[in-house]
Length: 250
Image: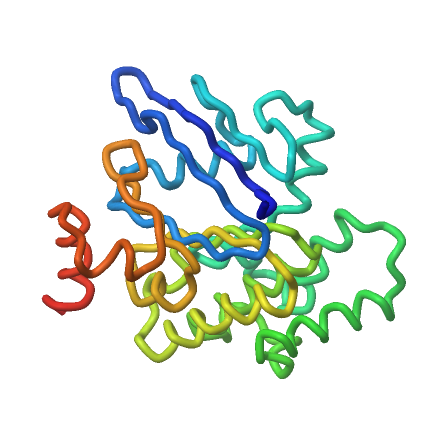
């Protein structure tokens, strides 16, 4: 049986009269890249926040790396979060720090016994992995959008997470840079043995990066499977329109 690193069962979450998650079931398998698709407001961000303990579900269960997230204390939750890397849509780099300082910051905060030599080796190795060794002393303002995304991924990997969460990794990028980022997501899984959830509206990103696709509609996963199983022959008009917008109408 394949190991599950994330298990969501019958998750329910409402905000006042607005029901966002209406009985969500989802598994992320070890070593898998799972793409979560859905229109704005469908609950993708709420689901991710429940995974990392920023929100608590109204009912149902969320288990991450074998831990029941909702029942963890502060210390245990912080320990779990160190095993989860979050690649933000806007890269979330500190503008006042160089690339090297941005990558070093998580190490200084979370790993106290690393020598200067060990830190430098780790930083240089990650910059090599994302193809930007020459950017080590640059400021974020000197980087392109694609370069910022790559540095953001490198900083996320610095603590060697078991799970990667990518939030709209290709948003705002040109088609060539989008493909570079898609390939990087696949490369990260292969090099660092991560299990990943990729949140995206970009079906090209979904097709290239995802082992499985999960489409979140009206608070539930309407379809889960490989790209060919979910697209392009979907009978559900909501899924078909998603495919048509990305691949036909464009």
